[in-house]
Length: 103
Image (cartoon, one colour):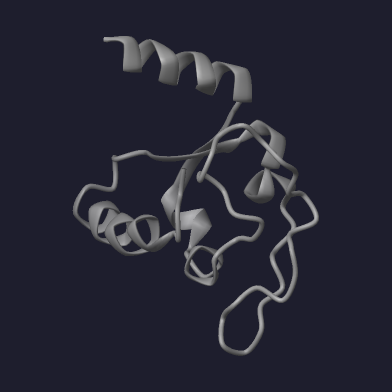
């Protein structure tokens, strides 16, 4: 996941500056492909979202993706930083979480 986007934006720029060969990958729930949609979130002047993102839908990956693209992530230089965006299917995420918890 990308959370608020702060690590991706801040650390991502520093890492790419020091190691341009590093590939940065973001993941998001397949059922809530906000970044994959290509549609930006509208933000209020204070940076908060003005509405729920149109591509958001409920997904089983609790706490992973809110219903908006955070402003700090929206402002990140995606062309420079993002190598790949990976959609994660809900069933696969649950199976992986259960498998890891069992170890």
